[in-house]
Length: 71
Image (cartoon, rainbow, N blue to C red; front, side, top):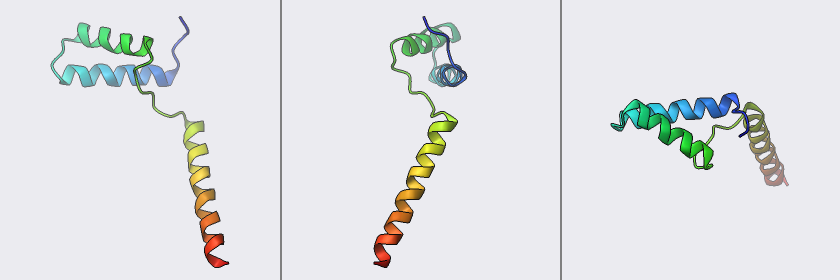
């Protein structure tokens, strides 16, 4: 199995906390979170590069709309 990235570790730990708040014991919450990660069901937070790319894309769209309005 591939090594986990820092973002995957963060997502797993947050999922464990969320499951424990829902009432699952820690061992079971951990097992559920890791199974979700293994099966690809765990939503991962965006990487900083993805966030910058998304922000740049939104910024460029906004500038394009402003240019179109001026015409």
